[in-house]
Image 1 (cartoon, rainbow, N blue to C red):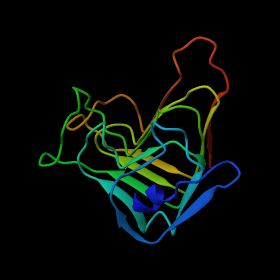
Image 2: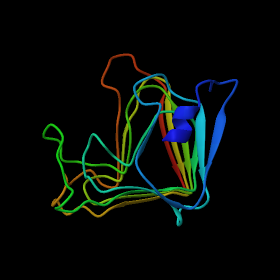
Image 3: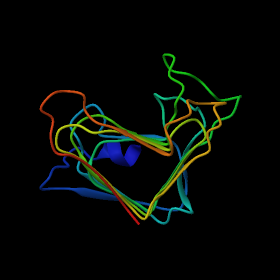
Image 4: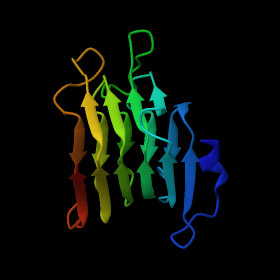
Length: 173
């Protein structure tokens, strides 16, 4: 989070790339409620570069993302248990990655997503939004103990407003 917060002048003309070395990292936010950021995150590899959280809380997933950039070579893991599980405002689903904050273009490459408390990824498309997943793995090991079942491993909904266009979701092997 510190590396993201230290960047104050990213723009379409001046995008940034943060290289993330192998290790296990705490949750982060990348351009959520403010304007989307122009920051890409490149992990060393998804097997050894992990963003982890164990709260199982909808409002605090391992990663909240709104950027015009690429997220590559990272694992996002939400693995909760009875000791750590919390609920937020009656919501029980807890994603590993949540992105539902406004227009953005995010490309995920060679990433792994896991949650045992809901869908591994939760997306909301808005006007001029692109989510692209290439060579990614989605796993939801949710038996209902810690989250709402029935959303699968990748949950995506569209913007409910009238006249919203250019909402895209791409999934490729």
